[in-house]
Amino acid sequence: MVHSERALTLPSRDIDDADPAIAAVLSKAQAKQGFLPNMYRNMANAPGLLETYMAGYEAFRSDSGLSPAEQETVLLAISRTNGCEYCVAAHSMLADMSKVPTEITDALRDGRTLPDARLDALATFATAMVESRGLPTGADLDAFLAAGFTETDVLQVLLAISVKTISNYSNHLFHTEVDKAFAGRVWEA
Image 1 (cartoon, rainbow, N blue to C red):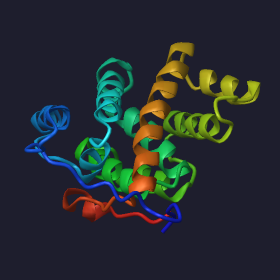
Image 2: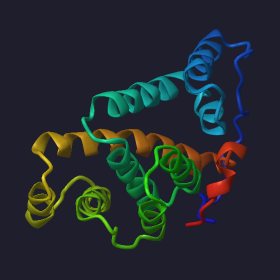
Image 3: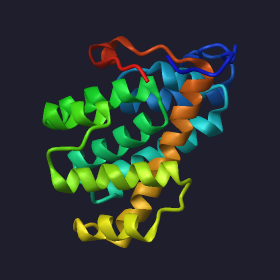
């Protein structure tokens, strides 16, 4: 497992928290998700962090114009590149639920070329963006656009990177335990 040397020791929070800001953000999260993922319980120690994550995540999911398979491709590619075991497990399960072909999800998890050229271009570009810290080469950008994506899609990938940076780094800092709901798709960096 890849983790920071020492985990944060802040407690996992819950909807009955004594701090009204924490209780409110977790109540909102539970209403939307149907349960409280361990990641949310940890991020709630800074309510603005969880609020920002949820707002960005919802905007990406509802407004990106990317299909569910494309969304999971982006989120998995980013999480794998960042080595986030929690998010790779969670998004693998979400990909399965979204009927993304297993061979696509497994290739993403393994860092292999995807058997779908368009999704492969998307994963390759998202990875290049993370690895270059937002400075893709002209060739990276040209290959992404040549696969049928637009310059607006570049910004949607940036939004996904922003929210995954919040979740991936939070999970690294807390050494977040994978929820039982995602345990069927555990992954190790």
